[in-house]
Length: 322
Ligand code: ADP
Ligand code: MG
Image (cartoon, rainbow, N blue to C red; front, side, top):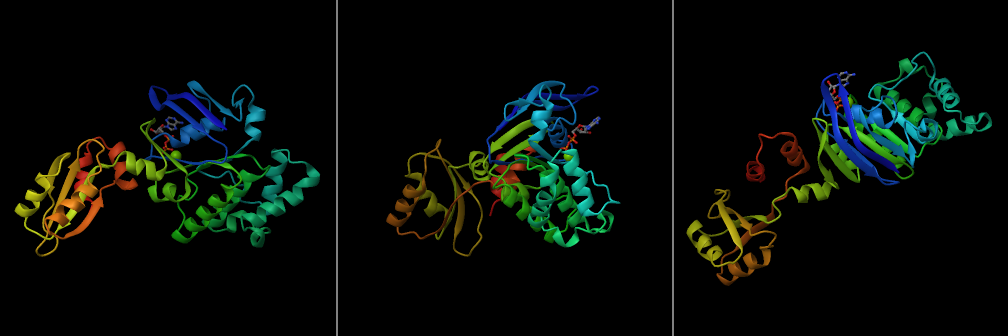
């Protein structure tokens, strides 16, 4: 549905977007995740045709955003970082204005706006001036203008930024609902947000894609899938003796004592070998209770730090997981 091909953007001699390639299927909700300045807004501004790329192309449903802008833009609803609201209009006046801009057929416009007001839960404030609305409601108006004309694709730039926790949940729920009928790209610098809403997460740092996958994928891909945390009711020496005889062990790290009379260890299997059965069998044969066995996957939070901060090491993250 959306094809982004080798996108570059320079602002003077500063490169904000570097070689971004991304394909998004119809119906997907994709989250662009990255710290401030990563290039999220720039990428979205190019996808929507708001600014041009230095190099590369974007097509929406097969229509190139530069060569067939009318066809391409008709398919896009955009909620920019700062929603383009006319605050002296009422909600309804503003949506009528937007539907004229988007050339919604006149005789269908009223019904269309009613449906949107209803689905974005704005019906109660339709006659209110936008400037008198709370930030959460203003953001809903921003979402409402994006879906005027019923575009297939929604591009939402930091849709929950500046909202309070209750408003964040409301907007998130709205986006999830919209995701049933639209292809959505949203940006955020908040992990919990993208992992809650998105089917796929694309992590951007300094203008480049540094990791990509489902939230689960990412956490698995970058995890030490073969590392397992153990709590063993024995001394370190006894535990070592048992583990020593298990094949495919790469390393054993002492993780300290967290409960009396136990020892915590982190064992790592060779390559992708899953050690769990061997560990279970060996300890039970030795009559030593294994009180805990937990694969160590990085949380999305840690992956984010991992791929956006070169100074961080995977091992130090893993050691921090308790
Ligand atoms: P994000 O949305 O991820 O926070 P942006 O796309 O807004 O990041 O910005 C990416 C980089 O490009 C930043 O370093 C920013 O300072 C720079 N930048 C963005 N817009 C402009 C502009 N109009 N002129 C010059 N530099 C810009
Ligand atoms: Mg931004």
